Image (tube, rainbow, N blue to C red):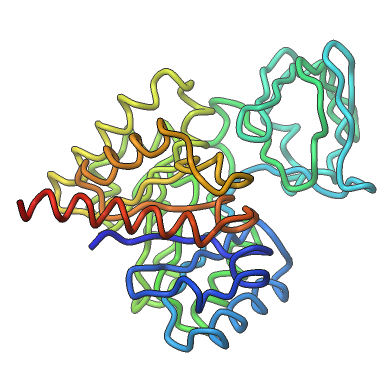
Length: 319
């Protein structure tokens, strides 16, 4: 039976009880990028209060540079105009040491694009190539600099302590680059906890076989991977990673935008259903729902649809 990683949040957990969707195949994901340590601890307690023996994944935010500290929760950006981010408006205040003028920056899962215009003593000035609202806690990505950034930020180590304290089932490692990153994390994580190494950087793909030697589970995050390789290369990279992992006997989860339209609509698009069907037949161990269940309006519908597709595939095998 395929596993479903369902991200909890304002929708699934608080508006919709997990009792309404619970089964042994569901892993409840806490996105460590959202909330304080105390808030995330409250998510763990709430999950356990609703389903005592729930299987929980603590997904570490990792060394992804994120925006923070906007007074209104966001700043407006306008195509062709400049805007600034002060060093303290990012969770990694030393970002300025790793970038240079004319570097291209992607933000918010590549929805926004900027160019570095100037670096001063306290801020980075960008030229925006997009119009919209850049919100708190959105990713800032510059290709080619990740190898020089520490693997674990302070919040990651605090979340690992929480996972150990409550003996969670899984810890997800974000932005793994080499097997040394996994070995470093293993020194902090309770050995009874299974590690899911997320494959979302070019370095992780280049070092895939070595990483596979350290873990039993991987997760392909197609959103963050796409910021490094470009959208057109995602399908071929996805197939390569799955094939390599399955060959080595590892279990693969796949994530990002399977049922994106169901954040707002009760039924998916036909292309989404077809892609999900083909994905479930591709040898993977499970899929991850992110915004669809965390903040979407129809988390029950999403999980029901996946179950229906799995049943359809199982019936094909029987016939």
